[in-house]
Image 1 (cartoon, rainbow, N blue to C red):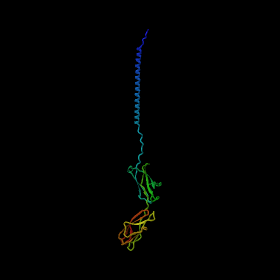
Image 2: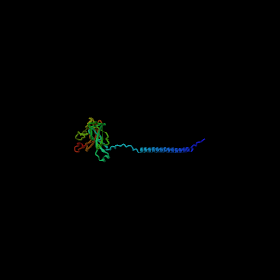
Image 3: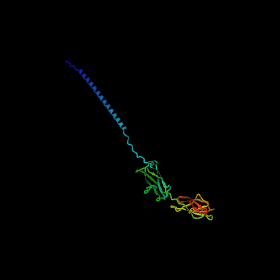
Image 4: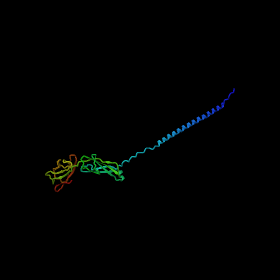
Length: 264
């Protein structure tokens, strides 16, 4: 019986070789996988850093440009006269600010007049006639300065009320001489465009013995002795709206003839 000898050594050698090369292959594959993972995480980290840097380097949004504030040219406005009547013309006087005066510029002005908050379209200058309006109306003006066609900040004046024309008051001498034989008389005269009725009164300084008719303005003076020097007395007239005019009159005396004269 013949026995065939098996080549166990070759089989063992092949198996050893396969095991050897198989282990190396797995190691190489594992190493490659590690390298791939390392490269992936490095690139991802760089990308994150790049994005973060990009976010940090984003330029700020452009700032909104603000227009410079208009220059204050007019400091105040003065309306004259301060107690106007319907016979007056109001004048607007401009007072410039210190910066406007220092600039040396020549400004142009646009005037907008208002009466009782209503714009007066025909009034475009620095004056306004009040004859078209009524007693008690309120007047003001808004002025806009222009510098080479560019408007600066506007300024509005205080409001003024239109007053009644005060009554006039004068003295008319109706008697040529002072005498103790009968009372001395003279006449107050008043003209009033807004009222036909006025009331007269005597005011300080007063002369003893002098009286007045409050409706007619007739003055009567009982003279105890003929005066030898000038005498003064006060008188007033008031209208129904309370507008009052007061004056002081002087009765001069001619020593030779004792003739009175109104020297006021």
